[in-house]
Image (cartoon, rainbow, N blue to C red; front, side, top):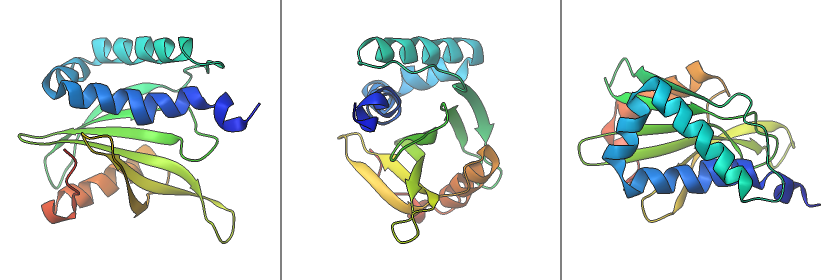
Length: 164
């Protein structure tokens, strides 16, 4: 079986299902995430539902919701930590950045350096029309480094792509 097919569950969850649900009802989606217990339960139930629709369901080990306030920008971020990625373009994290007029969906994705073949990360994003954005080199694959990268981007509004 093709490795991408074996890992389809991970990809669909982070790159298709979560962004689609977030953009369909931004206020409702963020309200669900703002309640830590209900948000975590909702993400786990969704992981199971996506797994039921693919050939190979993956365990949800490591799936975790946390909420943060970025120090410089003061923006709230709902951070979804995903089970460890193994192939491109699976994500380590998906960040939901609610705003007054725009909802940001950003991902820190597993990638490989095309010259060396060494693992690296890419900062990705999704727009409300389903367009995937590649915003270049990502942070180290830790929660702290990704939050720092998000904070440095949101500190300067001109650095943020048009996400919705």
